Length: 160
Image (cartoon, rainbow, N blue to C red; front, top):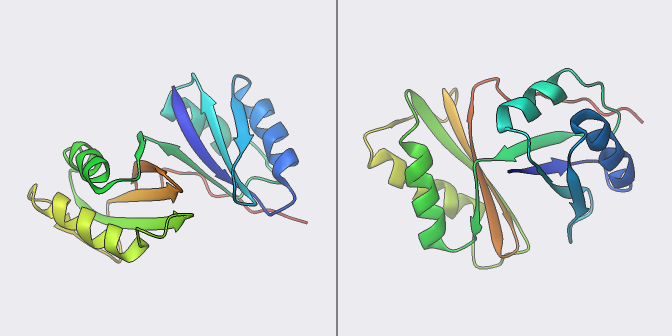
């Protein structure tokens, strides 16, 4: 099961859900407490999700992040997930975080703390042009982590 974070312009959530259903066929999408932010679940593999959406012409999807781990937004869980994903890095890395609906965590603190956990594995940081980026998306009490290679995720341009 692959969990996805999808962003869309506020008010275009319905269009984005339809596009995801067309592109992925087997997907369950729901809204979140944040406008323009959707969560989806699909039995498709992460690679298949990325490939299908890379070749899909979208009008509403802005960003798609397939999570490798979807955990409780607590330090122990975040660090454990970062360690597991950090083992897969065979090059330089950076950590990028975004926090929604959680006042106990800050994006900057997540980036520094999880980055130091991965450095502890002997991995090298490169903030300007990393081979891998660990994306951390905190949504209230849950957090999704995704380790992406440079250029792996498709980028979308939304037109009005």
